[in-house]
Image (cartoon, rainbow, N blue to C red; front, side, top):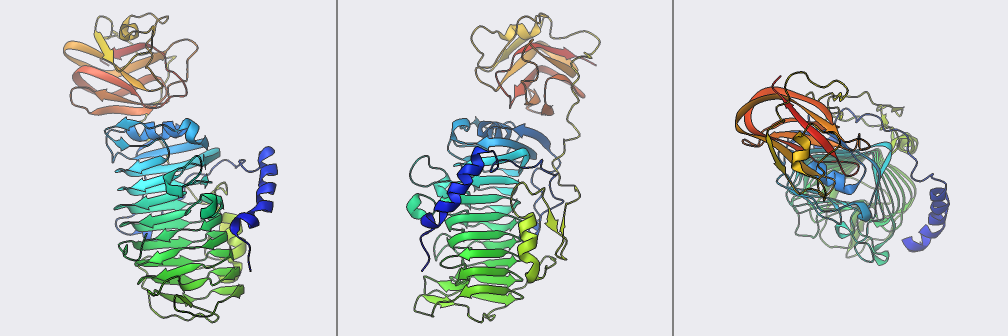
Length: 516
C-alpha cells in the first residue's frame, strides 16, 4: 500500500530545499518567444490568440500584472504581460479600473478577454498565489510556475487551486507551465488545474503537474456537466494521488502524456463524460483509467497506450477500472488536426519539453523535440508603441507653458503645475506607483506629440502608460517608458498621461505638448 502524498514528499522536498538554497529551483533559461499558436480544443470556437496584436508590458509583481489589466482602454483590449520574478502575496494588491476586476489574494482574470501572461527572463514563479479565470475568454498562460497554493492554513489563495477556471470561461490555452503542490487536502492543498461551471475549449499542453493529492477536475459535482472540450497533451503527471483528471460530463482528449506514480487513480471518467485516450505512457501507477468513487459511469476510447507496471483494483459498486486490458466503450470524434508521437518515446519527449523554463520546446510528431519558430501570436510590441528618445525633444512651441493641469492624487510636496513650468527641478508624483496627470486648455488645441521628461535620478521608473483624449476617452497611444510619444494630430481640450505600471514612484518633471 502506498504512503500518503505528504510522506512520499518528505525526501523530495528536502532535496528541493537544498536546490532552492543554491538557486537551482528558481533558475530558468531565458524564455523563447511564445509558441506559434494554440493546439487542441483551444483552436476551436474561434480560436485562442490571447493578447496577440496588442501592447506588450513587463511586470515583476502581482500588482503590476493587475495594473496592466486595469490600464487597458477596455476589458477586451489585447495585451501581453511578460512576467519575470516571484509573484506572491507580499507584492500583489487589488487594483481597480473600468477594464478589470482584481483581488489581493490571487491573480484575478475576471470578466476580461484577449490576454497573454508569459514568463520571460529568469522565469516567472507564482508562489502560494493562484491564477483565477472567471467569466473570461481568449486567455493564454505560458512558461510560468505556480506552486503551493493553499485553501487552508496560511496564506490561502484561489480556493487552493494553482489555476482555476469557472463561470462561462471560453478558450484558454495553458502551455509549458509547472503546477505543483507539497501534499494533499490534509496539508491544505486542492487541485492543480480545475474547470467548472460552464468552462469550455481549453488546452493544457507541455506542462508538468506534480506532488499533489489532486491533479484537477472538469466539473465540480455530478450535476455540473456544462464543461468540456478539453485537450491534455504532452504533459507530465507525477506523484499525483487522483484526478489526472476527474471528468464529469463533456469530452476530453488526452494524448502523448506521461503519467508517473498515480497513487490511487488517474483519468476518472464519470457522470456521462467521454475521454479519448491516445498514445499515453502510464508508469508505476494504479487504476490509471476508469470510473471511480461513483456509480454514475463515464466512458472512454483508447488506442496506442503503454501500461508499464500498472496495477488494477477489482471492480466494485463505486469503482469500474478500465484494466487490466483496457478496451474502448465509446467513440469520440476530434474536430482538430493533431499528430501522435509513438507512446514508447513519450517519456523522453515529455521530459525534454514539459514545464516552465524549457524554452517552449515542442515535439515534431516524430519523437523529436524542437524549438518553435516565433509565429503571429508571439508577444511583440504593438505597432502603435512609440520609440521614446528623451535626448531628442520635439521642435516648436511647448503648448503646456501657460496651460492648466490636474490629475489623480499627488504625492506630498509635489504639484500638477510642476509638469508645465519649464523647470526640470520640480516635478509631480502620484500618491503611489500609478496615476495620471493632465494638461488642459480653455479651447480646443491641436496636439500630435508629447514629451514626458522624468526628474533627475528617477529616469526609467515609468513603465507602462496610456495617452488619452480626456474629452472622448480615446486612447491616442500606449507603450512603456518616458520620452517622446507621437500620435495622429487631434483637436482636444485636455490630454491625459496615465501611468499604469512603474518600478517605483514616478517623478514627471515636464509634460510637454506640441502641435507637430
